[in-house]
Image (tube, rainbow, N blue to C red; front, side, top):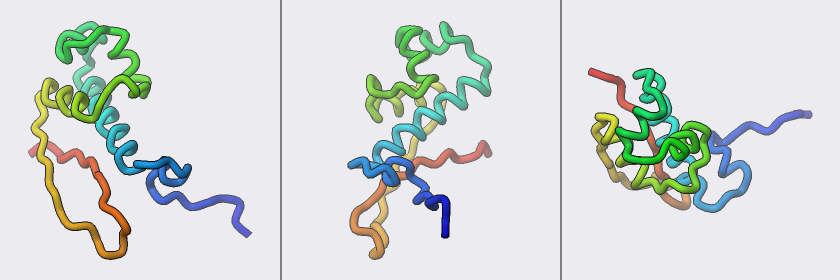
Length: 109
């Protein structure tokens, strides 16, 4: 008898949220932003200047409080941090009932 449940890879789907792949994509975008900020060792004031947001919003972003940020806004933050964004559309596998959204960071060349 198992004392655990194996994750689907999407905590939002596992918890029964609607639009689970969209929610996970938003979290992954925010995580990429956090990684870039950390890698560059940017102070919150500098991040606020680069992203043209308030320091309190930088704090929210870094702490995963994302309700005030749309996916489009997060994509804009990535561009402001010097990232290219490519959107690729492909058919869903026949085994899935609906399409998904996936965020992947490509390593530096």
